[in-house]
Length: 155
Image (cartoon, rainbow, N blue to C red):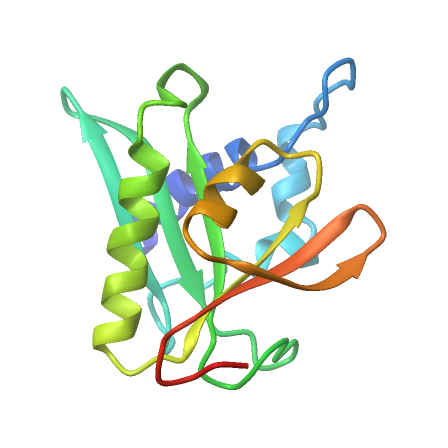
């Protein structure tokens, strides 16, 4: 993905942050923290950088992207980490499911072993991940590490 798309990824990265009811949303600058910036810095320049977007009437309303994080290597060297966001007015309409399905198919067809993610256990997106056959592989406080492994590679 070329540099002009990075601001769009920043917007979707911010939209992907789960804000529990009654909690004040963080400042937009939170996406510049190293642990979040890693999802978008130089995106498109590395092996394992893939993105799919959803559009409605010329407006981008959702994005699913992944990249390999060798420094984390949570579950294996060929298992990228997911970021997924659908803008609030469009949630619950199957857009996240379609984006995730497209990304999983692309990864499987290109020889990757699966897709990992980290999600807060109270995030409603957990239902989507369970429906898409992600399995819980670790718990870190309120966060779950989940993985969807492709049939030829079961962890």
